[in-house]
Length: 266
Image (cartoon, rainbow, N blue to C red; front, side, top):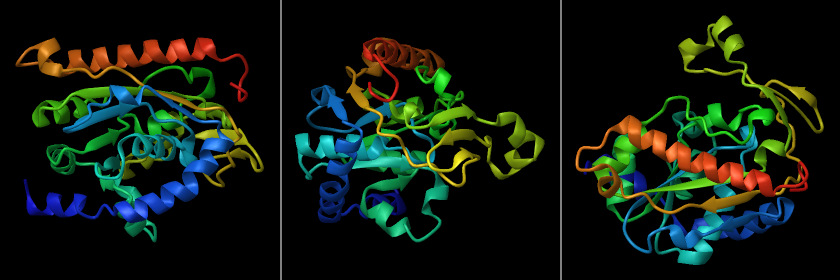
């Protein structure tokens, strides 16, 4: 384990995390009537890679719904590290994010966190997933990203799939705008999308200004852990593992969708 990677995870501050969770967690729980189900599917000890779909655009509530429920169940002796895009760490919130356990997404950082016995939360689809059109809300699309599988294999930890539903109803997501990003040459700057959404109070928004989220009911469900070696052998095919994970997640997402009666109300 490289010293730099060890230093990265050492920035987590459990006391500060508790303060933020206690302040923000109840607000989001009440606003979104949030439920987190089956946390007991997360192994009680040892590293685990929680792989989830990402929802809600720029103001995605995923982490601040999952993490308070995790800490309520497991306490603050075992951190949740969230892998984040490097762009999150440019600006005044960098220090706060690192103290909350958000670490830059890299194989080295993930390995350090997993080997420490922590839970690592990853959203392979990133902003591509969080800006998926509302009419395609109940699909799992990681945009071909499979690095999470390699991370779990190399660290020797299970993949714990998790699915969340409801955040794509916090506003009307119209299009990712892939074609527009390519037309404007933004892909050269690693910006693959230029999404368009409609919400409150600004109406149409192309990322900025960000609309406030409607109080859509959000349900997150943790699924059974996947022991990669036990299921796929000592030399697993990454594409096969990825296809299985996404299939399990999409089946669960469709099941949760069938339980919802009305948009926003849940």
